[in-house]
Length: 230
Image 1 (cartoon, rainbow, N blue to C red):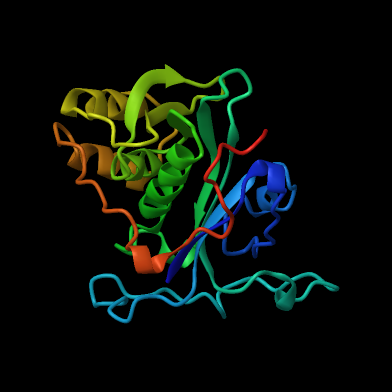
Image 2: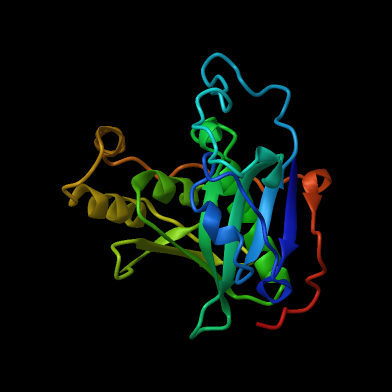
């Protein structure tokens, strides 16, 4: 399993993901954002009884005529698209962070680890801050594992904004973590799973941070010794 930077926005990288397996798949083919991925084989200890792998084959709907699975990039486990803030060039926005459907909640923390990976690259590229907006409690909780903290702000489409310094984890507190959970608790249209999660995390502390990817699992792909032009 490898963490790789495919390119910055100036490089116009493109990635064709299977839309049946990944949310936001169409956002990775525009060439308007940078892209980083987790790719390769799953760890050999994956799939213990508590978190067995889910099927990704027979349960998928058939592709329309004229489209073949070979047209999708194989071996991608998670991906993130990112670009600089339009008004604050020192801030990098993670626009779309997606994990293969059958690997969500697997315990591998692919999304949080990928967010740490690209935050490290943002720091090396000269950015001061990394920011992301989330629209569900599970993504919110997962990003705290990457060292993000809730800013108290929301976007116009009711997404909570989280951020962290590019070169280190934010100093998160239980108070700010719970403040974001309270914002979700105020919402009427929550799934049963979301309501159960919020009830189970009443007064809970933020989750433990995940470590950065091991050096032997990292492929920078492109040089970022200097801040890339936007």
